[in-house]
Image 1: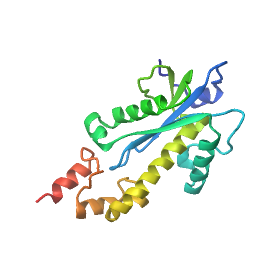
Image 2 (image 1 turned 90 degrees about the horizontal axis):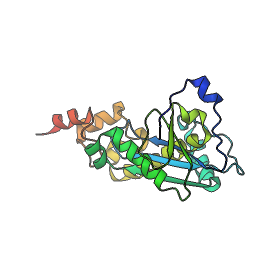
Image 3 (image 1 turned 90 degrees about the vertical axis):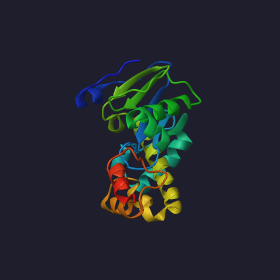
Image 4 (image 1 turned 120 degrees about the vertical axis):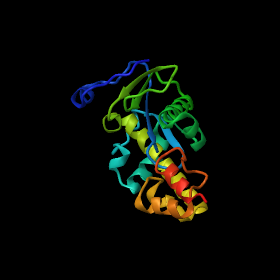
Length: 210
């Protein structure tokens, strides 16, 4: 296992084809929000069933992500979505919780990849060869697919949780520290899914305590 860092031009020129081996792309969603789990996905694409329009999930509309989510699930050789809970984020820190979610996603694949390509510059501990690809979600289709699965899954989680705690507006801001979200925290305090070790949650929770 090793981590590699390349310039954008070098990454674009790389050929990740490995004879006789499957390649999995891995990405996460939810490192930055103040609430909810961090979600990771792993995808092994099927070259016989290409998917048009794969890209970094952040560059796509919500409707396009939803449609690609279903297409990826239908056409990929296999895929896996996992998460690390708020409790695990609090215990481990967000980086280690993210790597844990990524490892769970890879281990959840029904097929064993020969190579795992991970977006970013850090790698989870895996039993197979892995490479870290900076901006991989824009360069490697399998990572793009993983970014879409993770993003849509987490957005759906936020929409469902919004029904339990509508006063926070999770369906709109997805847990990020928007003006609306911070105002709700000041007024209502933290809910069970808030990451209480994150600032400004920790600061605002102290403010609302009697």
